Length: 199
Ligand code: IMP
View 1 (cartoon, rainbow, N blue to C red):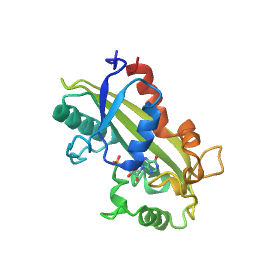
View 2: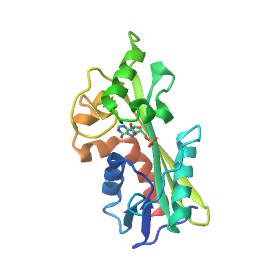
View 3: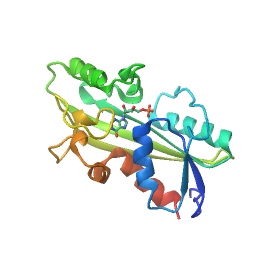
């Protein structure tokens, strides 16, 4: 059984991505856990050298818990397209280049899909809760949908404007945060984390 975070615990959110921090903070807000971001503590972001989401989430959570002495929560996530063999996947952030230009990243996805009629896509999120003694617990969430073109909506972040979840007609970029959280990969991983590790 995974170790549980007691009410009132301090938790480091080991992410420097403002979009993810916003979403994870909103998911944690109803629970009695005090969150502090890795950036606030001046922690450095380790290189994401693992080949998969779970490996990268572990590596980020372990780096943050070791540097801070507090339990740490990290997310590694990405956008995958069936016609591209699951790309961009773990390198989703890199497709946006150094300027973090996701309009460009979405254009690349569209260009690589080309005339392929298979538009199936999904988001994956791995969450890892790590403790200063090296214990970790990881959880994986996924949401299936369609990669649409052109992108629609100004909300969310990253690839949200080009993703329509199954059984929906609007993109994540067009949804209110609460509506996205009702189905999202991150919320699904978070629900498992909550059940296993939060009091
Ligand atoms: P990383 O987990 O820091 O490697 O970055 C994952 C990247 O995947 C983000 O920068 C986004 O581009 C993309 N991504 C992950 N989750 C979402 C999401 O909920 N919406 C849109 N894009 C996402």
